[in-house]
Length: 149
Image (tube, rainbow, N blue to C red; front, side, top):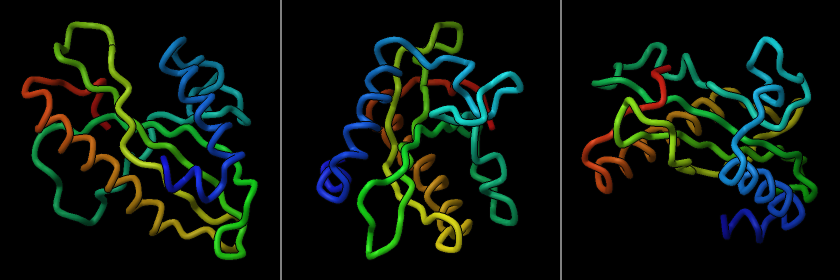
């Protein structure tokens, strides 16, 4: 988050406000671009990354549900417009309890239009899932995912 703030402070403030709202109030289902009744201009998408392991060896065990909160960049990165994504998962200590943790896995930028590279974004999603799994293994020995991909 620190490097993101240095790269694009205005976008950082926008994303931070969305992240804090998600933690404090939850995510409004109508703001989810993946939901059938969601707003196509909503501020987040989940679940995402359903096919990120296509053609690769499948990891063992269930995969976490991955979401992304996103904002448009306001400062070009390497002279190019950027779109920022905050990837997160929601681990549970007990599969029968409500979600009580929003675990941020990574913040990445992606190009817009001709600068967009789906291979990079797929790698970013896979890295975010693996970072979340790694954190859970190290910090919470018993956990379940909100729902598998």
